Image 1 (cartoon, rainbow, N blue to C red):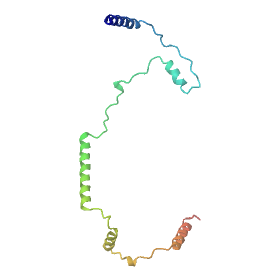
Image 2 (cartoon, rainbow, N blue to C red):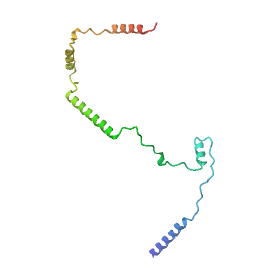
Image 3 (spheres, one colour):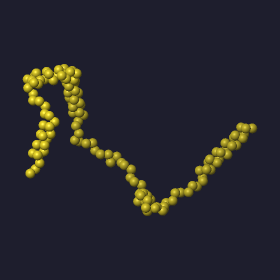
Image 4 (cartoon, rainbow, N blue to C red):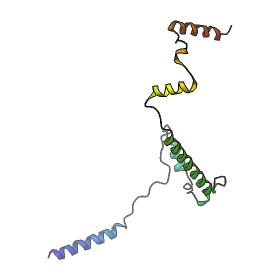
Length: 145
């Protein structure tokens, strides 16, 4: 009994779904709607409403031509290979010349010995008063007369 009822219900639903396509729906209005002229998008809405045809879709003719002033792929390959070679040379140089940031006093002493500089022969550092007098003198010299 429930099978017969199910068949009738399914049959009615099928008929209703088929007839549902015959129901007319209202078309959207083809005339321009009232637009508030103070709206920031009023001009855009009016242009869209008054457009005669939709905007054109892009075509394959719009694709730009292949540039002719670019470096060929072989030249790029050579440049990359040269850059990798320079990087390898730099790495080798860094291995042969390690950074000497651990003992700065020893580095300073060795450099002074190489250039022949004796710290005892250096002039004394200026006092703050001497520095201020030097600055005043330079300001007076730089002032136009």
